[in-house]
Structures are given as C-alpha cells and as structure tokens.
Length: 132
Image (tube, rainbow, N blue to C red; front, side):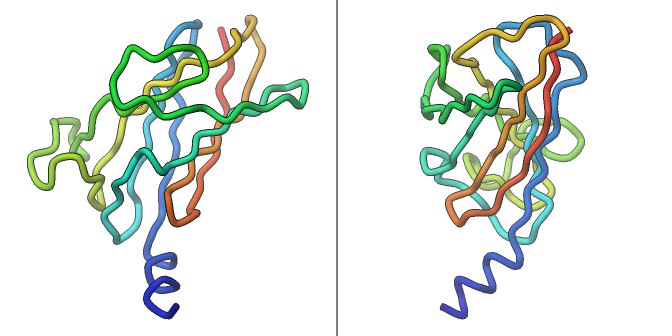
C-alpha cells in the first residue's frame, strides 16, 4: 500500500487542448509532468462532458482511424517535439502524448466540452475545448 501511495504522489499529467478545433478528429496533448513512467494506454479513461450535462466514456482503439466515441494514441514525443527514442510506447517524465479523439457527437460553433483524461492509477487532468 505504501508503494502504491508513493506512485500516486509521483504521478502527474497535464491535458492541453488544441489551439483551435473546427470539428472532426480532436488532437489533445497530455504531458507527463510527474516522476513516473506511464503506459498501459488501454487502461486509461477518456471522458467527455458536454455543455448540456451529457457525458460519454470513450473507448480506446489501439489503431486509428477511430470510430465516433473512440480515442487512440497518435504518438509520444520528447519535450522538443521529436518522436520518442527511449522506452518506446511508454510516456516517460517530460514527454508528451498526442491523443486523437473522435467525439461521439459534433460540437456547433461556440459550443464547448470538457475532456477528462485519467491514468490507470487514477491520476486525472481536465481541459475544455470550444469549437470555432
């Protein structure tokens, strides 16, 4: 239990919304701002809450393109933006993950949604996306 508690304290992610969103596939950046390696993306949770209060749990798709209501890992990159070279497939501290999300419903211009991303050990980050 102590080891699990220590891992929780050392894990942190930050979800960063795209600069703009005009519909279609939404690309979200998730930064590993903690001190632990994170993987097992099939066990991550991605949840979208819409302005009207509806929400959707998005299913993980190991390969794109995704169907509506799914997400996939597009790539893992070093802080400088180059593809990862150390520990492929693992989000190391300081790296960032690009997540491609296909919403299960479209957003009209000016409409927002809140996206929650959660790691297998329960660490989460939320961000808002507004359609142009």
